[in-house]
Length: 139
Image (cartoon, rainbow, N blue to C red; front, side):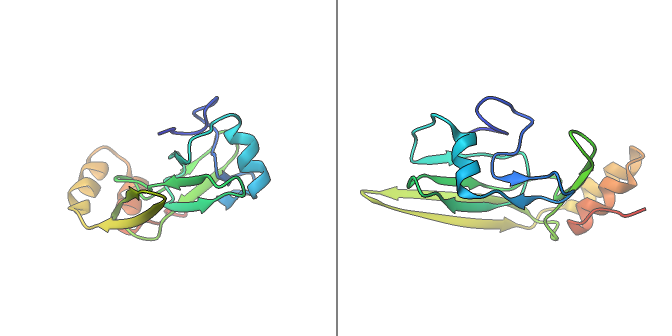
């Protein structure tokens, strides 16, 4: 499991954020970023967007999503936002048997209102909104 990439934890492995939104990278760029990782399954995070991508190399890149904040704005390396459009937590179940595999994405309801109230207590109305909606608060 890699948060960003093998060499840089702050770089998104499968999304390009230079446009201000998370756009899926092409196969060639993802393979370049993966570099010399030879594992069949590569699990990454960072963008918090649940995705499962099969590359031309046969490798499967899985981002399980986020169990917490489902939307956020950031300014580094450029201004961008991530939105899941749901407050529910996400994860995946990867099942591997013989030469077959299955990736099951799962969304889980939780007490996000409690988390949102805590965000408000800490002067983070933007996070409270994101926790409740999975969207970024546009001010």
